Length: 81
Image (cartoon, rainbow, N blue to C red; front, side):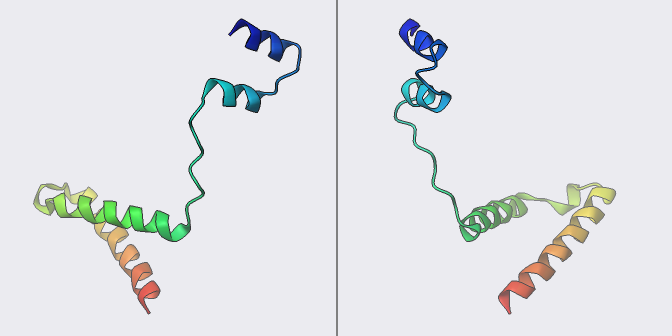
């Protein structure tokens, strides 16, 4: 570790090289497509909505949720055309 510090100090190593040395085996996740991200999020949202008991939601929060769900429905309807 001391030799690593000295290499950085002497400017023979750059920060990305230090990361490669100190964090071996980690590879960056490939850039995900917008469709893959949307798929994960819709699956998660569907799971959360199934758990939701609308009878227990406060009136103000329920109103806001319904407004957002209607807006989401409109976006989904446009995509499905």
